[in-house]
Image (tube, rainbow, N blue to C red; front, side, top):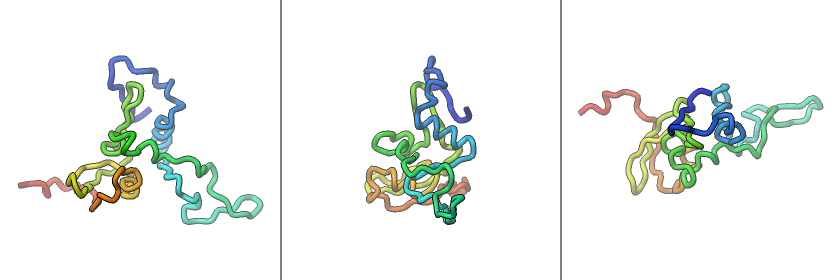
Length: 146
């Protein structure tokens, strides 16, 4: 599996983690999928009809599926801030799928964070009311030159 690395000398077998939510999310992203917020109505802006002509959600969609809970700041701070998730001796690195953001907090100043979008930062923050500004991280290194 791509973007999964051991961080201890003898990690658990990776195949033993196949039923964990984080393993399933990484497999989905490696296959070209995207994170599910759990609040999406499944229509993606289009109304889908089944074979009977009734409106329905897109095929394979489950409202109960919410990938964002694995990145909650209170329970998984490394996953929320740095885009990595540590599980049973393995690091699941989500940074290739996330963008880098600059986030200004009311009391702790500017911080770099990895997230797929702005909503992810607000949704998973333990203190969303303290977030003052979220902006994409500038790719141009010249803006940091002194």
